[in-house]
Image 1 (cartoon, helix red, strand yellow):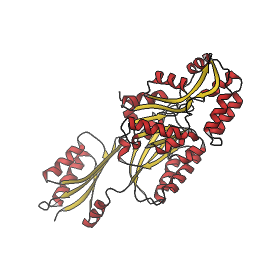
Image 2 (tube, rainbow, N blue to C red; image 1 turned 60 degrees about the horizontal axis):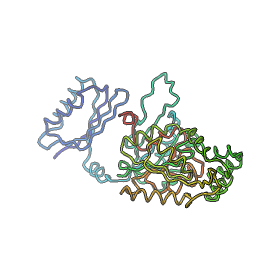
Image 3 (cartoon, rainbow, N blue to C red; image 1 turned 30 degrees about the horizontal axis):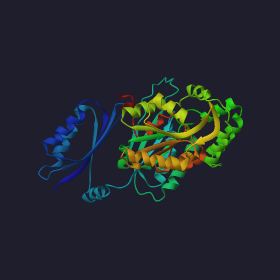
Image 4 (cartoon, rainbow, N blue to C red; image 1 turned 45 degrees about the vertical axis):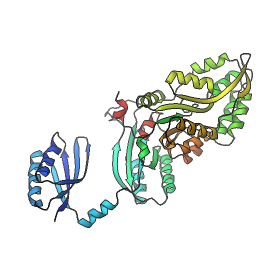
Length: 405
């Protein structure tokens, strides 16, 4: 009768270590049922689940492995696995897995312990923990340094909303961004990313800059804030703000566009996504002039924005065509997905305001970026502690992959 044994190897990593051990297993025609390895600071942890053929005695194999481990200066441990335990493990394959991502300027033990405690409370098992961010020098002076850890958990979760709520509390208490979502096939098959423009792709609201020129900055800013908080219908909010811009000269649009400030990390994330072959677009309740300016500057594929009516070189205070509000944003995302011949699960939507929620909610990966509370509570994923390039980590892209050209 064949035997199933779990081999655990720990110690200082070195080239050829795995080759030396598996060559011994090969001599005895051992089948490898499972294998996993992690290396932290050159220290190895390797696990191999093997089935030893009936014609060989395990004692001979284990003796040879122990001798080889002694020569390599590593520790090795063996655990026999009962047949019924193995069959139970096999039956568990295909169970639902979830990804929990911790993202911030730094990650502390306090933050990690609070998240781990919630995972345990919900009877989920941590299968894998990966560091996606780069290595941090001891005397680090980079103020843009980010820390990101991705945790894969498995097990039956009775109330995902309850766990999400607890993780949101940890975010509020500690400042760490925590994203939580089901691990599915689409996670590795995203093809389209769309951004809101104002306060997402660029800092601040372009309409506020126009309003300052018109001398109505305070009034427009208050209406903008009410709309972002969801206190005011977006169409009504936009109509009121645009009316206050009546008489502003068209040339002011050029001045404001040239002084737009991109959000931290915007150029980096766009550059990397383009390099990876993603289609990138803007779906915004902002204005076409600024959207087209950013399209030329960043090389974007799509821009859908509202259009100011201009007559005799001045803003009339009206808009041309249908207003792009929250529901229109979602409809546009669906249309682009159809044009690109992809499913909505292959799309990513990023925004900060209440009017972004419809497109965030239907996208395969919806992200609230430095968003108001109402948006963070509704979105499954959020970024509040780092720049826009934090999106790359939420997509599961490591710093090493980001730096590859």
